[in-house]
Image (cartoon, rainbow, N blue to C red; front, side):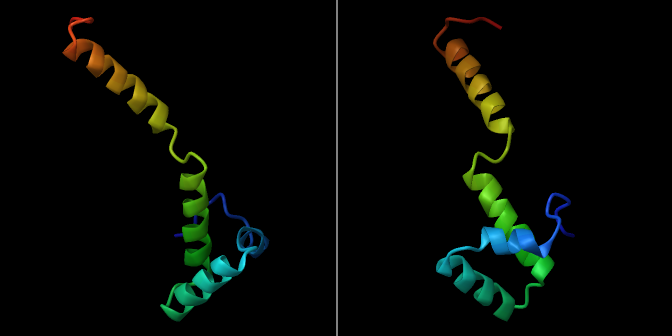
Length: 76
């Protein structure tokens, strides 16, 4: 299923501006991936490389609270 945030093949062209990405697209195509699947994979890679999930900030806060509990500075 294609990611709903990817609207057109123009996005694929924008994302794949370097030769290495073009080579990756060729490799994925030869491996049997559809253009929709390739666009989704490239979008996901870009999303994760640019910060990705908004859960990261929450996890950092939880890890900080865990540290406070483990060091005895915060009681449950």
